[in-house]
Image (cartoon, rainbow, N blue to C red; front, side):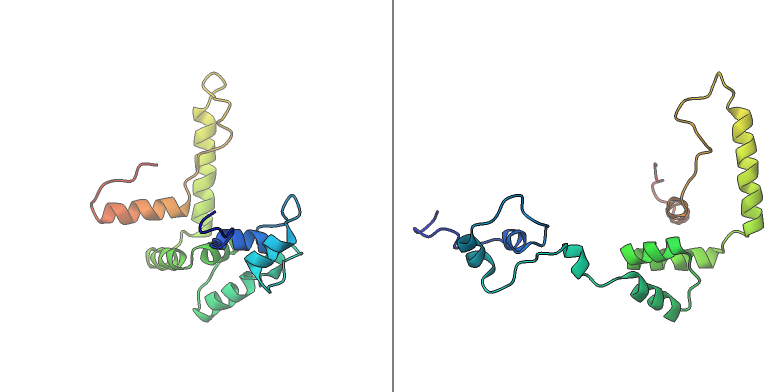
Length: 154
């Protein structure tokens, strides 16, 4: 308590908590404290996420306006990380996507080779399937390798 007055300086986080942006508090908040924190604003009594507008339709429209072919995974990536995803899409489209038939054959071959290499005596409990590397990691490695700088270690 400074200068004889309590709750004179209220942080944004406290104001949002009292307003209900972090969900319902575990115990009721003193009405006087609530009025002091949020003034004339109404406290939120519903789930805070219900007040947000849906993002996916707007992001889907943006990708279509850019003329990009995308998968549902691409849409989610773009929604979460717009600039990073656009850079990734550009690099992927420049370098070309693998032909689906070739990719399926390569995956089947990798499964066969992995199954042959993993005999019951050598198999580890955590080795359920063939190890996979995401396109994001591959993209970073290729880009980093092309720049001839320090290699990524994953």
